[in-house]
Length: 446
Image 1 (cartoon, rainbow, N blue to C red):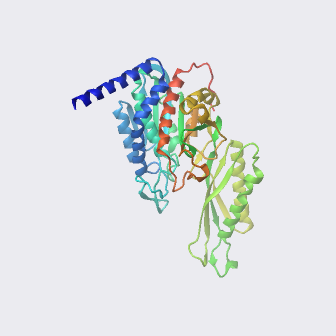
Image 2 (tube, rainbow, N blue to C red):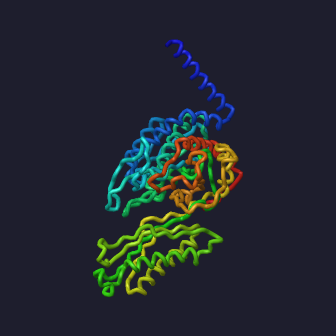
């Protein structure tokens, strides 16, 4: 037993000396990789715990407590209850430098998980008046675990750290409950960037259809702006056997859904930007032989420019109102209804400058320039205020066909445990490399 203890002590001493030597040589990437290897299983365990205990937007109480406790254990100044449940950790390096923010989102979705996993979610809740499961179906559990790991590594490298790192754990990225504010927009409103004089912000997103070990990125418009809408069609009810006494809102709503599809195909210049108009739900009536008086449609709009968004919003209102009018009904359009996110814009000069950091983290061959995505992200609110870079980390098992991988926001969505370490390494490299950069390039705010 004595021999084993002595051997372990020698190994520990060798590790410490190795870390110190690497730091002295300023070979931070190699040191970061070693530390990420040591912490990987802890990150996986955090993620599995959070996955098993998901919480909806503005209700991330357990997750926030877990995060705050961890950050405090690292000796950080910690602020809680920002934008309801948000947590901010402040790590001041021992050397002067910039203020760098890193962001992770914490909320889950009202989806019932069907994966056969030992840590699958069994949580139930009432959402919009209906019982539903709660599931991390977009990878936010992994984002939280990654940033917790980054916090632990950077806190252990405080003596070599230039500047200050602000760890932002954000609630309600998927949107706040009806009638509440939330997410990045509320955090910005409450001064999370301004109060800490943040110079730059980085964010990442795990991607279930990108192979583990890969990073994808895009300068400028990387993700679409989004706004949701609600259309209420008011008609006249009747018995199903006598439709001639009705103004059938079900029929009118169906015509509106079909007519909305001409906006993208006939009004938007698709050679310049992509766009999408989606109706996600139609609600009305409750019996087979009753024509109801009202039908509600909810959906969303995706676009990559303010001009396209204005055009699409105008056409949705026009089509809904005039289609209803032609049938003798009325349509009330609420747009945006609950949510509106700007385009997620990656500062072009920042992206160019930090691309070597991403390539160093994943390898040049595994760092991919990709087309813009029609998904949306409220990281866009942060990137409107300070230069930002948002990138993707692969979460699909190696060798799997992306067409067979479960998409985000689906009940079978899953992220491979092997994906998290790259996220940790990339965030850490971005912090050290940004602080080390010679600021002879100009960031253009957007």
